[in-house]
Image (spheres, helix red, strand yellow):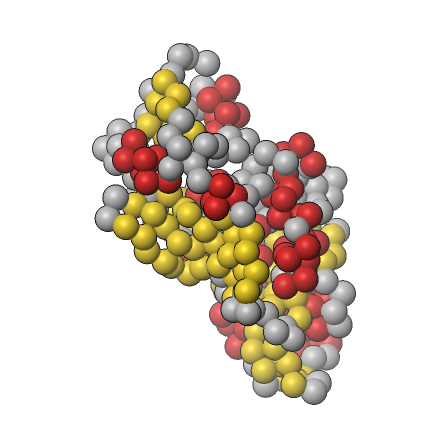
Length: 290
């Protein structure tokens, strides 16, 4: 790696001021799990890295309230996995973290970094989208809040300006919602997924009253499957409905090929696993991995 300057501000505001929106060689670094690999491969050659490790501790904290969870962006995925508050109020996240990469990475990688990197293969973004989460973003003009589903703009792309940083993630109270994340891998259970499907359902009796279904990895960004959701609303869960939802998802999703599978292969995965994820959420099975 070529030499670079390392700045270590002690506040989020100071970190924002050090970022230059017109200089692509100045980047923030949190856990650094992805950025360091890019640097070692020569894909990215920074002139300056702005470390976020010494900013206020509140940005590495988890707070639970009646309205849900607030998670600081510098919270590690390992801390998220072990948090009693997360396990109680958003257990889907706890279960997802168990197969999200490996223990070493989870103990270093941060929530904010995972979101800001914009990698469509990440397991956490589709889960947060399905849970209706939002992010607070800090910039030179103050803070703004946007839904996680509005954060991603394309393949490895977000709507964040070059001098903006994710400060926290807010997950609303889930009540009696049923949720599941189904990760389909072609390798070990903690490998990158060929397809990820997150499902959050509301129900009354034996009928679904609302659904949020999000797909990732097979698509260029984590994506709400609104046509599949529409198939769910007001319906009783049976095999016919699950098949209709899978067909709708396969027809709706704009799929991309990569080393984990071709478009036809991923389309068939989508057709099968959307229905399986809905079934897992409805019966309270939680997380399934294949």
